[in-house]
Image 1: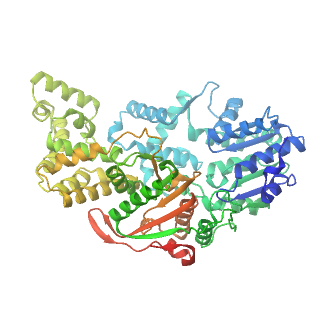
Image 2: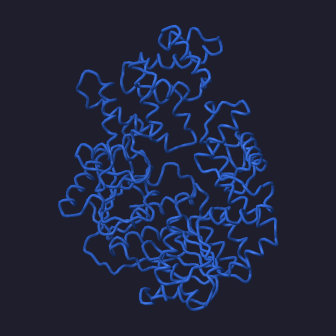
Image 3: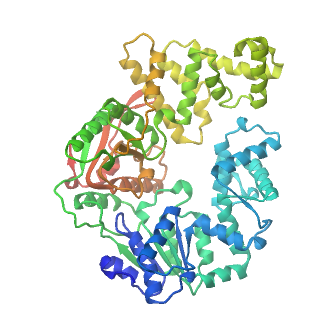
Length: 620
């Protein structure tokens, strides 16, 4: 039996609404999960809807589990309820109707993310393609990105997939191999289930008749293939209950868009309910957040309010440079800690992963524990470790650990077979790697020589910062990550670190001391009471007493890559998500000067700060 006293007026209106199509525009911290679960319980409890006639789709397995547990806790009979992620529900469909899914056998195998990469490598090996000569992440991005757009290998063009089109032949090989081996990757699950429903009217009607009520959580995060899956299940007789917040739609790189709300509203004319009562933040934080997001044109109007009144306004803090910004954050962390707020209840949130480096440096210097909640610690990131390996080799070129890491990164035609042969020659002749390369065949020697030409330049470069720059650019690593802007930004930030280190260095062996410095920045993060470090994307759904938002400069947030009004609006939504993570204290920091690829550049304040009335914050 549902307890109606737990709902506020807006939640109650949605939970107890007529059995019609409905969109629930749920603002940040407004209790959307309570509302969604309450609606399902109400249908079963008061309308005698069988749980087997309900489909509830979530974006994570944890959310699906929570949904079921809370229904059971409320003594709701959920026998037969279909709930899970898009992928898990799609899998059940394919298991039930494998015979109608083209070229699929009953005992098909699911490829998880790591299995998919290994399978792709095997496919390329069978086709005499050396995986080390290709950017696997780009190929996987093409395969999965195409499927999320509903594109088979033969449908891929330069127009719909851009520069990744050059890998379409490998996608075709991979697709054929998956069919032959009866393999299905995660993206394929959804594409297959869409094709199943699209091409089999009888099966489509079976599911439309089965699911009288369709629930989808986090609707703002769906992409094209998920939206089509939903529309194929929708009929003129069943209803939907879509829960989400278009103001928190921040995954356009996965195909998500707030425009899907508009499409649903235009096509189905659903009832619209707004959840605007925020249970997380104080009213001053919401006042600033409401003012910011109101500047977006593509959105469903709503204004959050709170019963948590406070005299503490958000703070906008202007710093001289990014080092000063990081030091200011650490000073305030210490201050709030003295006031009794635990480290785990504080978060430093930023737009780009590369921004964590200066913060990590200052936290370690202050002996303040921290935990990376999204991404990897700066000096443990793949691209950073590649550069550091080149630097180690410039000190000791015979270090096989570092040699094996980067000798074929970027690809130089030095695959596993050649490496094995080369190592055997070292043993046979008792020579170091460079000398033993003289015993290789002409073509093999040419490949190895191309590596040593680069290494020799690094060895002979006396300027430390210039050596780091060449380890990034001359090696080809920067261009290697041409389709991964975050990694390029991390490489630029590594160069910034080198320039700063050089400016402040007073020792005798700067390269070895820098390498030692980077090693000391890979500490344990077992301390559960650590300050949380994360990107805005990684912060979604979380909340903290104190939030420090850093990098509020034009070119950082919003990103310098913004090229359209819709992209600018998504950047503003990112800022909104950052602000609405804060419960009691919100501190927004910006720097007048930032080091960008070794050069200090003057920065303009983020236009998003300008979007907020000055009466909504204190400027420091």
